[in-house]
Image (cartoon, rainbow, N blue to C red):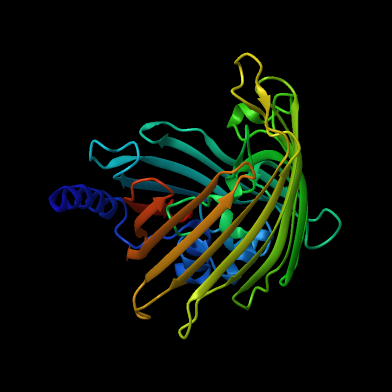
Length: 382
């Protein structure tokens, strides 16, 4: 196994080294000359300043500074998972994505991410939004496109390989979608200390979902309100959703949910803390044995879930972070799921980041996975 891992990693390192002779950073950091730690606890998880840049739809950044570079960057991933689709024990290199991020005009910003290859297959459109950043004056935004729905920044930018389980709790036939990118429109307000946004969202699909708000598509109003000062390692907020989802045998599930979250980034003297509690309600969770004679209705269900995570840099002079996360969720129909993961995240070089993760789920075998991630902008424009 050790020989296999080393044999897989070193060719990728050689490829990255040949791509650029100098250290590379994503486009915003490259334009400003910042180190990754300016915006990140550990790439890709955001710190207080990074969260501020994100929730302003990049308006916090100077258009003239960003104009000095080509607004395109490339990411490539190598993945291995002992329990996933890689049980043949090979490293999967099929994780290539192209991003466009920055200003389109004075008050218009955008982010587009297209997977060229994902899981060794042609990839979908992941993100494609445009924001007008002067809707009712400064600090107000109108955003349309395939975008992260309103919620804490950690749902779209976090350092662990395991996705969060609680926001995607499955209740009967319906899955909560508190952290997924969805097509829709939202309005937002963001200052250096407070932020709020609300929007209407539909399909999660790629380009084909842009106009899909049909009756057979999950649709929801989602919102988020938070206190997140740009100069203090605190994020405190609430989010919620109210929507309808079609059921397989006909009918509609009307659902709602709310949650509260607290995040305090780590300091030299104490670990960082993430706490989240979510409650959900589904009025019609589906049927028992759908498609069979005389199926029984599941009826309404009240779900809940909790996330608790600690993260810390044990060696202050090195770009390494250790995190441990526990999640417990109940779907309100008698199923309780406990998931755990522990991660070691570190920076191999200025533009190469690695994560090693051990994980387990209720009644399942534990597994180990790792990821090596290279990101680089296109060279500076002249």
